[in-house]
Amino acid sequence: MEHPQFSPESERYMIEHMNAEHADANLLYAQVYGQMWQATGARMLVLDHDGMELEVTLPGGRTHLRLPFDHRLHDTKDAERTLVAMARYAQGIHRHTTPSSVCEDAHGSGETPSG
Image 1 (cartoon, helix red, strand yellow):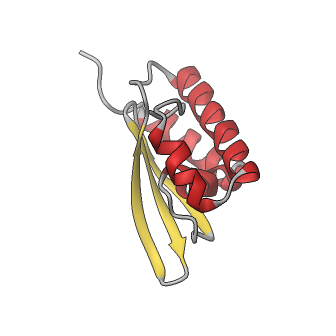
Image 2 (cartoon, one colour; image 1 turned 120 degrees about the vertical axis):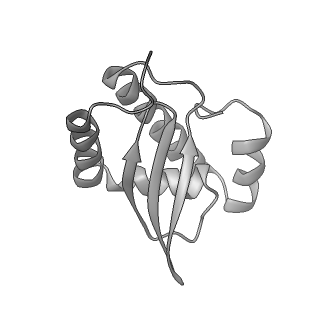
């Protein structure tokens, strides 16, 4: 039976890598997928086969956000591919649309990498 979590070492490595090298992607996940456009920062706390949990910094304080993946991750390579695809999609949305139109685009069409 497959466990919902990666090994502690794998999860720790991926989280540390995302927080150290891809803080911009964490922020995009919160803004685009979580529709938290006012977020000024985000730090990954949990990464498992089903989704990620972020600590999001907002003007009024911090909150936690759980973002599910559109599929169950098979392994660390699948996690990397999925996170990269989500970040690229979010970059395109963030760059080419306004927050009011993104809410409809990212969650209304069902065509996003995260569902």
